[in-house]
Amino acid sequence: MKRLLIEKLIVISDNEQKSKEINFEKGLNIIIGKNKTGKSSLIKSIFYAFGCEVKMEADWKKI
Image 1 (tube, rainbow, N blue to C red):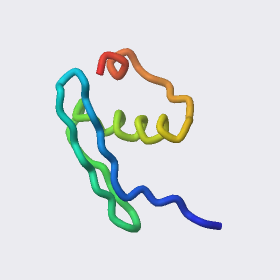
Image 2 (cartoon, helix red, strand yellow):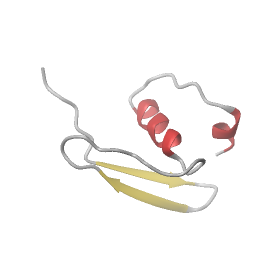
Image 3 (cartoon, helix red, strand yellow):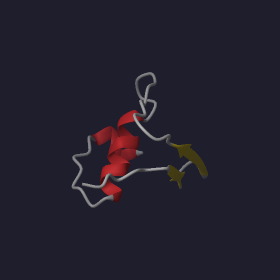
């Protein structure tokens, strides 16, 4: 069975008019950060990009 590897993710914010490029390494990548810094939004964005239906909380919809 083959694996899907995400090498790079580019997140673009229309509201803030800026972007962020995130590079992933082979193997395990751990996303850490304080509350309300976008960790869950990042994971949900990856799931959404692959066609998954994502449950979004009210705060996330505002972003």
